Amino acid sequence: MTYKTLLIDNENALKTLAARFTPLLKTGDVVTLSGSLGVGKTAFARTLIHTLSPATGEVPSPTFTLVQVYDLPELSIWHFDLYRLEKKEMDVLELGWDEARRSGVSLVEWPDRLGNLLPKDRLEIKFDFVEDSENSRQITFTPFGTWCERLEKMK
Image 1 (cartoon, rainbow, N blue to C red):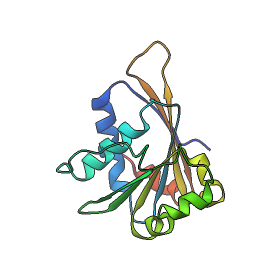
Image 2 (image 1 turned 90 degrees about the vertical axis):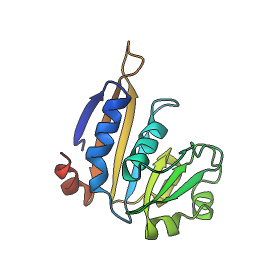
Image 3 (image 1 turned 180 degrees about the vertical axis):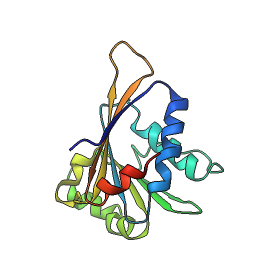
Image 4 (image 1 turned 30 degrees about the vertical axis):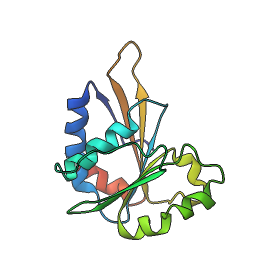
């Protein structure tokens, strides 16, 4: 089930989307970010983190560290990039998956690496390049579980 597909033309539109989306987040949420390399998954996570806490400094990609944790005033954000995982579920658990689920919001790039750890209650966000456009992206939200109702509240 696809809830909503949006066309984002530039970085300012991405910031507007993050501002609309962040009020929906709560501790225990899992938001998956999927799409090709370089499509904007990390840019979205960075924008979301800065929307929640503008004073947050640099928000690097967790490609090499695999996870970055941001203890923000309202929420903790665990930003996972699972691209380089080999053992999948075992490695995710070693990164603090259970603690992330209990204590914060989990943003997960390359969620296919979660395997059986992918929760039924989640929001999937898929990013796609728009043909013949350098900056535009198509972003598709697919809610599962409680997200079906919650996503309707996004303004």
